[in-house]
Image (cartoon, rainbow, N blue to C red):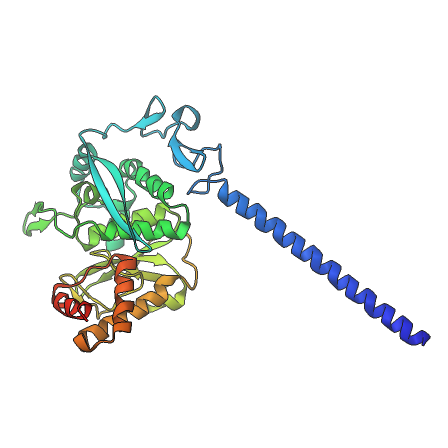
Length: 360
């Protein structure tokens, strides 16, 4: 009996110790969870905590929103202070554009001021770069990293961060904004001796100002936004199809050719990682792209909706093309859900099929 008593007492003490350790663990977990949660709540979309200056001058985090407060946060050396704002010498002849985007099935917009002064300045810059063995990526980096341009594009980054506090939703917003800018050329030509007229390649800000762009131009604009939102970005160039798409750092399993960068079509609304569709003026992308890394930064998490949604969309799109009116209502409703979720455009050749399926 005495041995059983001590055995039971030892077991009881062991259980108490386990409970005590478990309580400590749970307590620390809730402490850090509440601390991180409170930090997230009491900060702006760029993670600047309330009452502090953002890394982007002259913005100050005030009750969850980034506001211009130059008297506290100062201006960059490329701008001059006027009251609480900072002004560039290229902020002349403003016009307002509306940047539409779709986030989780909701259509939204950001109104944004652009300036002819900066657009004209960028158009007047030298076309060529000096140096040997220059790559396509070098020209893209030149276009993305222009400092005067950055000063007047950063307010768009701030507008995105103010509109959507969640980091992933900020990425989704940037992608959708660029995809919804109309696909069109500038119509501007450059004449080179011995080469004739060549299509002018716009800087990202010019694409925004003109509110139109080709695949390479829109890719550069998105790459700039992703970079300033803190993500690694890249450009995919499909030489055989003469097509460009954007890349964002992501899990290798979801990336193009194991590169660690996921495919983003920029010519029109499309789901992140979907590189299997027939894209405007290009058709299906069949070649292996050249990859140019444009910025280092964060990567997308594993398991986000877009990975599985892109697979579903590819499968359902094939079904609607092959089965047409014989497609099941269940599959058609799944297809329509993705159309609405990402604001996808229905190609003209599918319009009649869609109308017939909707009438069932």
